[in-house]
Length: 598
Image (cartoon, rainbow, N blue to C red; front, top):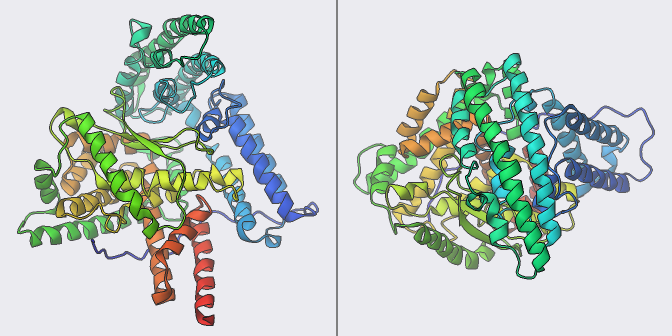
C-alpha cells in the first residue's frame, strides 16, 4: 500500500452569507416549509433543465431542451431563484436541525450562486468543444446516451428535441453575432476544436449519422406501422433538420465566428473578465481561495507529488525527474492493451478486483450498476474520459466513457486511477449512493457541486492500495501521475486565466511537469481554456476531504473508523465544502463524545 503525506488545507469558507432577517412572519412549521420549498425548487430546476430531468430519470420533459439563450429562458431562471430566496427568508434557519438545516444552507447557496451567474454573458458564448449542446446532442440521440429509446413515445420525444435543437442553433448563431459586437467571443483554439465535431454530423446519408443509432436499435416489439413511420421520420429529421442545422452552425463558426474570435485565452480578457473568473473560481471550488492562492497551492502540490514520484524512482535506481520517470514507464506499459476490446477488458478486470473489497472501506454500497464504453470517435480528440450517471431509480445504468485515442499510436495500459475516479469508489459509487438515498430531498440528490463531486473522485484515487489496484510500482506511480495532473490543473487554469500565461506556456509547463504526451497535454490545456475554473474543483475538494479525515483521525485516535467516516462524507450528497466541513466537524465531535462515554 502506498503511504502518502497529507497536506493540511485551511478550512474553506463558503463564499456566501445568510440571508437577512425577513420582514414577513416566519413559516408556522419550519421543517415542513423547508422540505416543501426544496421540492418546489427542485421541480423548477427540472422544468428549466429538461436534460437534467432526463439524466435523473424524470421523463416529463423528454421532448424539450433547456432554454438558456433567450431572454425568456433567462428571465425564467431569475424568477425561480428570486422566488425561492424570498420564501427561504421566511423560514428561520435557527429552527432547523440535521439534514433540514443543510437543506436551508444548500438552497441559500444554490439560489445565490445562480443569480450571481446571471450577471455574466454566457448566452453570448454558447459554443465550445466540450459542453455545448451541439457537441452533446449526438451522444444524447445516439440510442446509447441518456435519452431513452424504449417506447414509441421516446422516439417521438426525441424528434421534438431535434426540432428544438434547430431553434437552439438559430439562437446560438444570433447570440454569437451579438457577442462579436459586444466583445464576448471564445478563444480561437476552442472553436478550432469544436468545428471538426460539428463537421462530423454533416453526413451524406442518414444511415451514416450518429442519430441513426435509435433506428438500428429499434425494439423488436414495435409494430410494423410504427417502425415504418419512425424510420421515415428519423430519415427526414436527420437529412432535413439536423444536417442543415449543423451545416449552418459549422459554416458560421468557421467563416464568421472563428475570424472574429479572440487571440487571448484568459477569461479575464473579456470585458467583465476579472469579476467573471472570480465568480467561476468561487462557484467551482465553493471556497474563498483567490485565483493567486490557488495558483500557489498548485505549485506546492506539484512539488510535493513530484517529490514522491522521484523518491520511488530513486528506489528503482532512476535518477531523472518525475516527468522523465513517467515517460520511461509509459514507454513500457504494464499489461498493455493493443486494441479497444483489450482496453475495455482491463477496466472490467479492475471492476472485478475492486467490488469485493469495497465493504472494507464502506458500509453502504450502491445498487446501480455501470458499463464501460469508448468515447465516440468524433469526440475523442477533445473529450476526456468521463462518467454519465445512472438514473435516480437505477433503470438506466451509469456509463464510464474511456478515451482510447492513444491506442491509434501505441499500446497503452488501462489506468487504475481513472477507474477509481470515474467508477468505483469515485463518481459512479458516490452519485449512485446519493441517487438511492430516499431520505434526502430530491434537490439534494440532484445538486451539482463540482468541488465535492470531483474532490470525492480524486480522493477515491487515494484508496487504490486497499482496493487492490496499486500493487506494483507501475500502478503506484500511475496513481501519483494522475494526482500530479490535477495539481498541474491548479497551476495552469489560474495561469491561463489570471496569471497572464499563454497557451504555449501552459502546454510546456504541463509537458515538463507530467511527462504526458503532447496531444494529451494540449487537450487538457484547451479544456481549461474552454471551461475556466472547472478543473480547480478536483484538488481543492480532495484536499478538503483529506484534511477532514486527518482531523477526525487525530481527534478519535484508535476509535477512528474509516468506513464510518466515508459513510458520513457521502450520506448527505454533494455539499459546498464549508457545509461539508461543518457537518464533519459535528460528526467528529459527536463520535468523540461517544468515545469518552465508553
